[in-house]
Image (cartoon, rainbow, N blue to C red; front, side):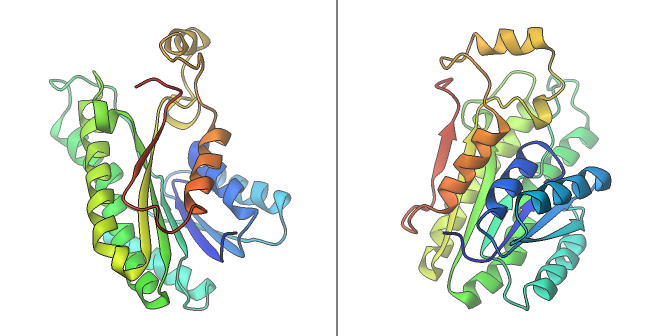
Length: 247
């Protein structure tokens, strides 16, 4: 049973929205944030309210690549949680690129690092003090199998997800004595979010490479995220892969 408050970044659509909908079934309050898609974020909030009236939904517009913006978001968290802070932080916000190394510009590289890795660092750094004060907390970072295996045309993306995995392992060791667990969900190819623009032909081609014969659904990703967050506290420092047998 989840305890009280969670924050899901990148929750306007796709995997983040699905995770928020799943977790809200067992929460007192959930904060959902996005930077670029206010209308979609509000639709996610409406979807959650339609599922359950027991969980308060607080949408927050936040640029998680900006530490000042992140601090302001956590001020809102503390306001609505009565200074309790978070029980659960789910770092889902991120972008993909799909370029060769030679075609990746300096701007591309820095934007990828800030969006996929620095955002996780900023949110964790801001959430941890309250978790320590409360004597508990769980952090789940949404990663990718490409962070472990690498992917052609995704060298920058793969590097950032490898960084997320390393940060997860190191932070788990640092925070375990404070009863704060840190894990990562390393996803294979999900037919939502970054991959929602794939054509049916492209999805069929990709599916033939996956032993399970299909892409994962956002609902499956959300249920796995919930399972990790509700696992015993002894589970920490793990990169848990769900890829349909791809790797």
